[in-house]
Image 1 (cartoon, rainbow, N blue to C red):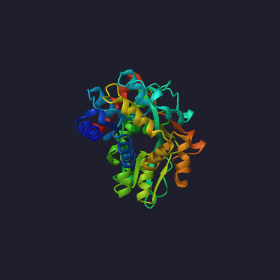
Image 2: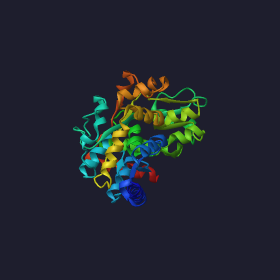
Image 3: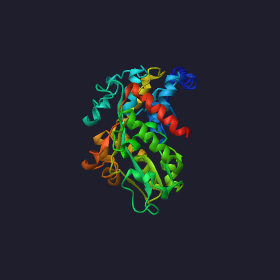
Image 4: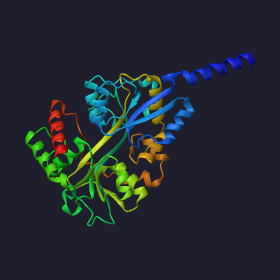
Length: 340
């Protein structure tokens, strides 16, 4: 009996010390998307170490995978990027029999045009892109995207360092769709952003850091960043501009090159447990795609009108779509804006 116990201990130590990729899960995600409590909880339960790396934008994620990066087991692209990655054969089809908590997801987030059969992606969080601002400084409160072109705030605000979102904001201000494939509309939006550039303090996606610290008084940002900043600085508010804005669903996918697909499926299934998914919302301040998770949220988050906007606000939102070959025109326009 003692020999068996010693042999088991030796095998366990050998596995943990040399088991390599079978004992690791590499997650490539947005900043502030996988909290330590979620990571360590999974590690404790499954004995798999979670290693988190972050990307700055969907386009950065795409470029990394297309360049041959092959060590990631889980990635978290936004909706439209899923469609692009499927075309590029970068994603592994999901075995939903290994992700039974898929059944916890609300139907409103399933069978979307970016993945109509949910073969490749699992909805993780959802949110919006609008304007975060310090209400103690910005007066009157902004209600329009034109505030991001207001010279009174020159050098005091930031824009998202994201080509689809920032070009989309300019398109919306000009009365166009964020998914416009009209070259003239895109040229107008580019000119609008070039006109704005001398006013912009910085292009940055992690607006929670600079809003919360007071480094900027206003930011074109994703909703969760504004609400995390507000947790640090109570004067921070968030608004969806009257022209409308974008709504996104961020997803969880397994890359085709993932070395540990089994642990990836376990991790995704873990994220879809209602109690765990509620912790995701508490950490990210984005909406949950799992209705039962809302039961585990504090009232302040369960009924937060910014995280779960009313119908009249939702009706003003657009989702970014894969624009196919026309995307090259957005790439070129953004490069030209950043080069000025």
